[in-house]
Amino acid sequence: MCAAFLILSGLVAQAADPNSPHPHQGSIAAYPNPPTAVQLSAAQEATMMSGKPVYTQTDSGNQGRGVAVFLVNAPVEKVWSTINNYAAYPGWIDGVDRCSEYKVSGNHHYVEFVVSKMGMEIQYYIDHTQGDNWVTWRLDYSRHSDLDDSVGMWRLEPIADGQTRVEYSVDVGVDSWVPGFVRSYLTDQGIKQATEWVKKQAE
Image (tube, rainbow, N blue to C red; front, side, top):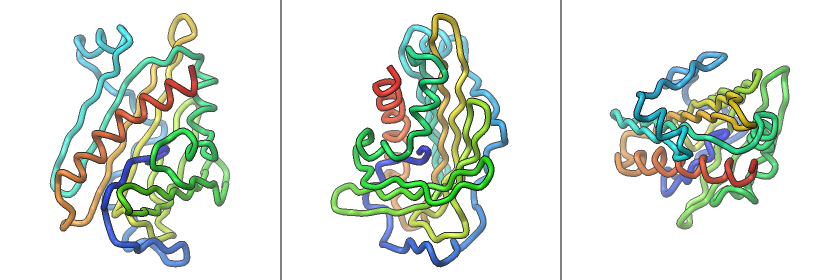
């Protein structure tokens, strides 16, 4: 979540295997490095600046996207260190049972996630590309994840009075037999949860 730290309720049967490649090398276009800024309308910008998060969600076929833009009352360095503290995710994010970095190569940080909800355990592997106050991610396609695909980004921007504008966006792809409302639930709950744990831990 972050990289893709979604509550993956009842998605798929266990198929994750770190010793087998993913069935494909990406079905959703990755975010550019660095990611482009999220564009808000004047009304959305005013809402965000008032301290309320702005959420958007789109649903198309077997894919869904969730976007959140919000303010954190902490300097960008504190927010950045919070997002990058993968080892702390199990204590911070409901449903995350395990989150461990298994490889670092240059600015790529590879992290295994194990999440559980309603008796289901979902395992997936994320390749994070870290830059200057931003990170993008996609699946580590050298390993077989329970998700069909996931890409996303965090983007941080310092503003006045030690505050940080935080942008979070995630795209999730699931198999065709998974009900559409499940995918919508993932993106909807994922973006709302992102605002809650980042604000709480950074502030």
